[in-house]
Image (cartoon, rainbow, N blue to C red):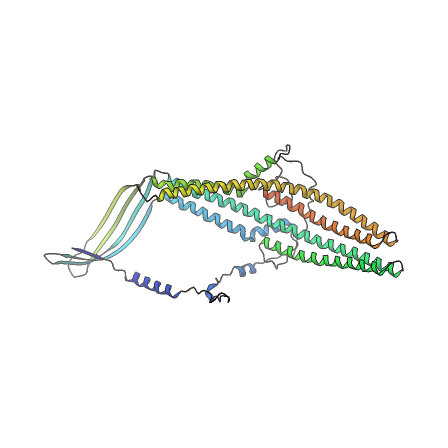
Length: 490
């Protein structure tokens, strides 16, 4: 009779200590439904992320052009770094999948205490057996193509994450451009509001002069005073909007909102007009170019590969395996016994799962359903992208027309105000005519500032919708409208 026992005192003690320590950890819940929970000190992860952000040396003493703001954002904004990390993680999964092509080698070291008792001679032998060993297992081929499908699935996943990384860069660029033009517009809004205050002050002073000369009334002065106070209210609001816009740009650039960021206005002018486009060609080109659509197509390919991976276990697999070990023996009862030996083994195994409780079939059906879901998601995204290109194109076209009209409106309103002011000074019109002209001029200034911002922002949105938003390509139509020009199609 042979009896074999293994002694693992260290492992048993370690397991006991781990269980004891685990029992000491608790997760307290709030005491009641009306009092806030008091978190323990260990509840908050003590990281230094915000301190690291604060420690960055950000020198924005000079006014930033758009290109420099984009450079800073691509370096600091965490959105693109997140998708970059996701892409690297997916790339590592490809190497993991390629491991199916390589053999698995496991090294072992074992020690056993053994006691041999033989009857009827009452021969006892007590000894230790120990030594190292190697085990090799190699999947030569899976007849269902599972190895290749697993690599293809991982590779398509990498493609998808890489495309999403590209799209995240475009997300950052769009956010910065939108915030940049918003800050430029807010700065111009302050200038427009200051001009409105100046005009209202002129009207108030004129009304006061007319009253002192005996040709005006207190009502005219009060009406002019109300218009002046309203213009001051607009100036306060414009300054507040400027501060908010500056914080939005700081966030888009990946710096704390309380860091002062100043920008210079774009030197390029708003394009005056665009030629009619073949919308069918423009949409098709956008769907071929957009990284987010390409990511969904790669995801669909990965889901289809997953179907082959799930069904590969329905087919047999051929393995080559082998082992080698060196065994040493030491006696413990004083008897003369000591021997060392080598153990070798090699072989091939054909493994075929004949029945697994329909797990493989269920997994294959689930993978097929997930592929169908990915295909539907892709179709939905393509339809949404086509509608996005359509709407952004006409938003841009409309923004250009509004900008052109706003220029004409500003010119006419300015001339009307000047004429109304001269007429009021000469007693040819009343204060109401002057205040109406002043209000129209203030409205024209506001619309001009808004229309200019809308034109630049609409162009950035169109470039984003077509997948052509690139650093340095701000407010340029080159490349966006590179498709053949034909008759516009609905």
